[in-house]
Image 1 (tube, each protein chain N blue to C red):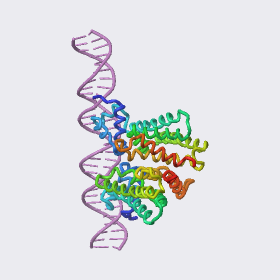
Image 2 (image 1 turned 90 degrees about the horizontal axis):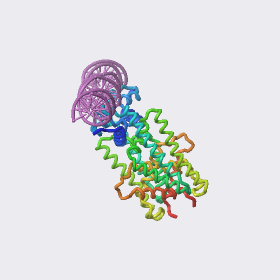
Image 3 (image 1 turned 180 degrees about the horizontal axis):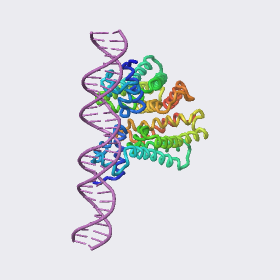
Image 4 (image 1 turned 30 degrees about the vertical axis):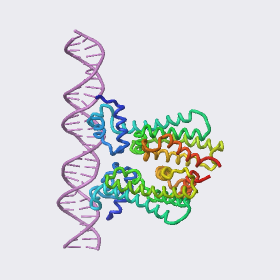
Length: 190
Length: 190
DNA sequence: CTCCGACAAACGAACGTTCGTTTGCTATGC
DNA sequence: GCATAGCAAACGAACGTTCGTTTGTCGGAG
């Protein structure tokens, strides 16, 4: 019946994702674990620390995914496809952390928020770099703006969390290829 | 020095958009208007009513935009382009209401939330219908899934509110045509 | 012209509740 | 026997809201 710090953080992710940071109280979180709100202070310093932990976890998942996707060589379109598949995997495998990362980062105190914004920029940079490669080697159209195209791709991907239900008629690999196909058609030469 | 109900709602939109519903207190809102929190109750029934008003306003802007975009005839690609331009206009002309509509609707009480969800579906339907027309008349590829494509387009559009700065190097009509071009390239035959 | 009643807007204090957090104690398990 | 997880109780602050009162404005009656 004993709980770990890990349990608390993952329950916090669940509630932050569902009700938002300000919509979740320490007593709510305690109830989720079968504890009193005050008992959580045996495991963590406070509420804000929980938000930092959850959001940072989200950021790490994304960065790890990008690193893995870009580890191997290949044509730009293939590297981009791996980035897309990885991003989608992170969203669907870690919905709570991702939702919190995407929607609740604004409730971070300035110092941690800045770190997260920087991490987000770094991640976005991975998409931009691949798009730039594709333009450079002629596989993507020359008038593709890597920054804008990166934003568009990430917009589609991040929104998935808002509508996709895993048990629907479209499984995740099918969804990934639908997205990748549509994106590539929008980018490629000819 | 006297305030109208209108003032209160639009200030509420501003704060809900910036700090979220749960992150905004009636005293915050009073301060924004140079009033005490309690004074707001001369103008509105309570906090939840303000959220309803702001969110409904957002929904109405979108629906009016879709109605206007589809009032005139034309090829599917042109009708879609008008939908996109309209949506973008709503986002940029009513940022506070739109942000609140997109992010804070979950804090609505069930009755009003259901109405908003229904309105959102109706609006999304406008996009799906045009996409279906385009597939039917052969201007869009036959394997385009109208539902999925509609979601993708709206994903790109709704995310604009999260990154676009009006005073940047890209003006809004340029942005609209960048989006419309990219979307059309992803859809059209050939 | 002035006074008066009506009304809306805002105040300031207080309501009961919930918030995040702290403290002191008590079990349980190594 | 000692650290640790949890409880019970409490803290001050903030929450949304209510209340009685004050303020300012303004149209008509005298």
